[in-house]
Amino acid sequence: MRAGTAVAVLAILVSMSPPGPAAASSALACAPARVVAEVPWAQRMFAPERIWPQATGETITVALIDSAVDSTHRQLRGKVDPTMDYLPPASPSSCVPHGTQVASIIAAQRVNGVGFRGMAPGARILPVRVSDRIDGNGPSADPTTFAKALRDVTARKDVKVVNISLVLSVDDPQVRAAIEEMIAADVVVVAAAGNGHQDNNPRPFDPPSYPAAYPGVLGVGAIGEDGARLPQSNVGSYVDVVAPGKDVLVASPGAGHTVESGTSFAAPFVSATAALLRQARPNATAREVVNRIMATAAPSRGGLGYGRGVVDPFRAMGEVLVADDPVALPLAPAPIVDPVAEARERRWSQLTGISLAIFGIGLGLALALVVGRNVYRRGTSRRWRATRAPRTP
Image 1 (cartoon, one colour):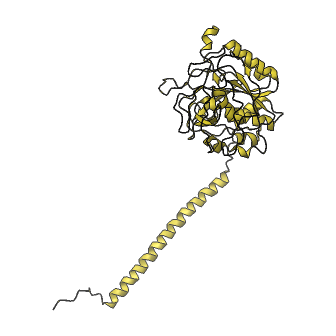
Image 2 (cartoon, rainbow, N blue to C red):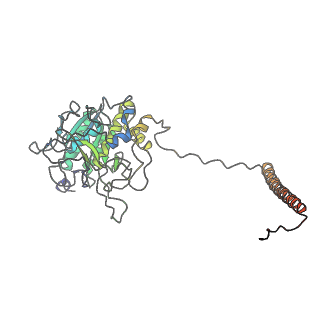
Image 3 (cartoon, rainbow, N blue to C red):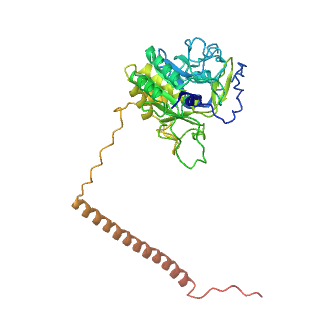
C-alpha cells in the first residue's frame, strides 16, 4: 500500500457522540475548561485507592503514541517527560487535547478540591507526538514515520508500557514489524479498538483495526457507567477487554476538565493497570502482565464486543493465578452405584408411603369418631327430635 493512502487512516480516536453535561469544547485553542470537583464514575467503580498502598505506578514510564501532552496542567506538572515529536514543528501541538486527556487518566495527581485522579498517579508519561488529526483535520505521521516512532520508543529501554489510542484501518507491514519488536522487547502494548461500529451493520463484527488486532497487543473496547458497550466501540476478536469509555472525565489542556467518550479513553485505564502490575511485580514479563489482566477481568453484561470482560485493577493486583494460560478442569468421575444402598433406599421409600397412608386413615377415623360422638350426644339430649323455631303468637 502506498504511504499517501495510509496517512488518511492514522487518526486519533474521538467519539462522535455529543459530550456530557460537564463537557467543555475540545477546540484547538487552550481555553481553560471548568474544574470539576466531583469524583468521576469510573474512579468510583475502580476505587484505585485500595491499590495505591501496594503500587502507584512509581518507577514506570508509560509512552503515549498520540498527540502532545500539556505538562503545565497542574495535575500533570512534573510527571511528563520531554516530547518525542514526529510532526512538523510549525504544526499546532500543545493545544490538541487528546494526548493530555489520555495521559490524565493514567497519571493525574491529587489536587485539593478535585476528586479526579489518575489510576496510576506515580507513573511517568512519555509523549510521542505522531498525530494531531481529529475528525479528519490536522497533521498525521505516515506509517513509515509511525513505525520509526515505535522503534525509537522500544530503543529507550525505560518504557515498560505503551498506550496507543490511534487506529490504522490497514495492516501496514512496517507498523506490524515495529509492534512485534516492541513486544519482543518485553513492553506491554495497549491499543484502542476503534469507534467504527454501527448497529445497523448486517455483519456482527467490524473490520480489524490496527495495532489492536496485532498478536500480543491488548485491544480495548469501551463501556458506559451501566456496563453496556459504547455503541461506537468496535466489535471483533481483537477486543480483549473493555474499560470505561463513555462520559469519562479527563484533564483539559490549560486547566480544568472535560467529559469525553470513545475507546481512546478506555485504553489508558488498561495501560494504568499494566503500570501498577509492572511496579508491583517487577519480575513478571509483559506477556504475564497481559495474561493476568485478561484472566482477572470482571464479568461483563455479555454479548459481542466485550472480550474477556471489564478490566479489574484490584483483582489483577491481588488474584493468585495457577498458570499463565487457562487449563480445562478434568471431567468429574462417574458416580459409584451401590446396589444394596439403592435397595435400602427403595425400601425406605415404600415404608414411608405406607406409614403416611396408615397415618391418614387413622386421622380420618379419629375425626369421624369425634364428629359422630358429638352428634350422638346432641341427638339423645333432644330425644332425637328435630328443633323448630318458636311460633309467633
